[in-house]
Length: 334
Image 1 (tube, rainbow, N blue to C red):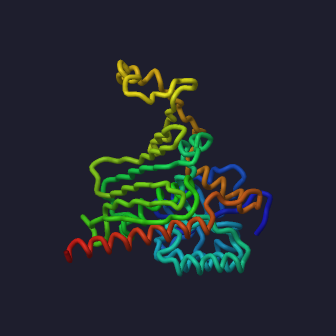
Image 2: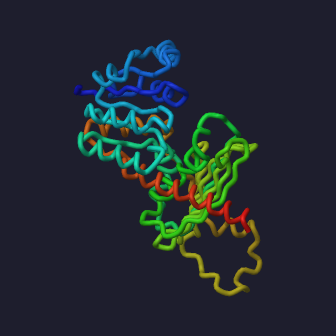
Image 3: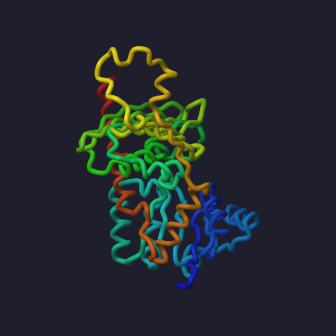
């Protein structure tokens, strides 16, 4: 189906699928094609709350859609995405793209055969703090991320690496660029039979290093990213979309001798540093992501997170999980 405004629907009307449907229902330049869920109660909830159409089958939705958001459990991503692509319908797949690299490759092959777009839902790419930081990025050398959340049974069908850390894996890959040379990681299960808290260290070919921490058993919520580079330091609060860039003020002398620092206390240091607030567009990241998908469906812009990007984040995340398994096995066998 093709129109001036693309028709976009949602497959999977659970918690996240409902949010996609909510935004699509009011998104400029989009015809909301409706929702389909195997659980009729979820579809009816979306229809009642949002006033969107319900489809009794996935084929019925695909027959009236130019693109769809796939927001089903990760284990079903491959089957649903391939069925969509075989109909020539563009697809936005929620992260992680697939449960395995083989499944991701089959999705990409189906997309290549059909010519349809595959976009992956790494929504943090559209976080206003990240977008506001882009003009100041200059070859990051060290990145530190903390993504902590209280326990929630939703998402525990996969380990915390694929549930939460994969967001930051995708972010640091997009910020640094280039290949990863080495991965070290550890983690443990707490409430589930998969890893609930994990730490990973990624070393890139160019020398940049990223330390990532993710937990779904924290007593507090935190989504912070710190980026260090020769030109300064960026601190991003991804939870509220705020941030700042700290750099030495222009024209300052080089403090190469210890004596030059005498008398410079914390208050004095503040006079040496320029603090630049990072202010981005006040827009919901999920809405920005769906605007990008709309443009990709129309062919006016490429997806910000391509299927290849999604596969890359998945590959690194699965490698982190393997390193964790190896580390735990070596620890308890010692």
